[in-house]
Every structure is written in structure tokens, then in C-alpha cells.
Length: 200
Image (cartoon, rainbow, N blue to C red; front, top):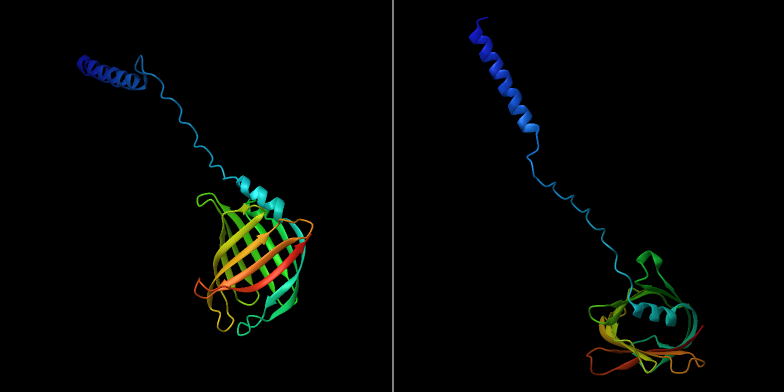
């Protein structure tokens, strides 16, 4: 091999080596990029204080006695009623809901109660073993009374959809937790659907 070819070969080798080294070398004065922060884990919202207050009032087993309208065509005739209500704070739902069950010879139902932090109101959903359901709102306890207003639908003839309002009175704790339920087909004329007094 001639000297010139050897020189060219050496030059090419040195040149490639220099490029490779230059490519591997870090430019002087280049700051190291800061490490990216790990994304923060999303925290689940905690139940509001209003739910804690509601739980204190509702949780437990209640024995209730009262009267209820059984025949819509005879709204003034009320039949005796006895029932048991049990309320618990559902841990599976993060403490956001109080779950209640109502049991009587003629009626069985399940209720869920929570607090809407946006609307600043309590929200209730109830379903029963006769195909009926009810949704209600309340602004909370005022002077030991709580008014619930909403809508209900029923599978009973002549009572498809109606307005409802329930008044819960805890003025006299010794006398018991008094409740009155009213209904209206037009939102103007109201009739009593049931009344009960409950004690733990």
C-alpha cells in the first residue's frame, strides 16, 4: 500500500474517531435538565361536615307507629301502620351516603341520603317493593324541623306521578321523631299520605 493511501486511511480513521468522540462529549456549560415531577395522585373528595351531622341524627334502628292512606280513592281513610327503620353510613360509598331500610308488613323500601355541596342541599332517593320511587331535596334542619320536597312516581292506579313533601320534626326528642308525608297531583292541593312517630 502506498504512503498516500496509508495517510488517507489514517486521516479517515482519525476523522471518524474525532467525530465520534465529539458526539459523545458533553458541551461545556450545558445545564442538566431538571427531573420531571411525578404526577400527583388524585385525592378522593371527603364527605362534608353536613353528612356527619346528618349521620348523628339518623343512624340507628327506629321503631315507628302511625297511619297511612292505602286507597287513593278514599284519601281520608287512614290505616294503622308499624314499621322498623335502620340507617347506616355506607363505608363502601366513602361515607357520602346514609343508607336506610324500611320494613313493615305492607311496605318495604330502601333510601339513600347525601349532601350536594354545589346546591347546598340534602338529596334523598327512595325506592320500594311496590315499584314506586321518590327523589327529594331539603335545605336542612331549621328549628329542629326538616322539610323535604320533591317528586314521586307510583305504580298504583291513579297515582302515576305526583309532588311530595315530607316534614320531619325533632322538637321533642322524648316524644319521638315525628314525620308527616303529603302528596299533590297539581302542586297546589295537598293531602296527607301518612304520618308516623319513630323512636330509637
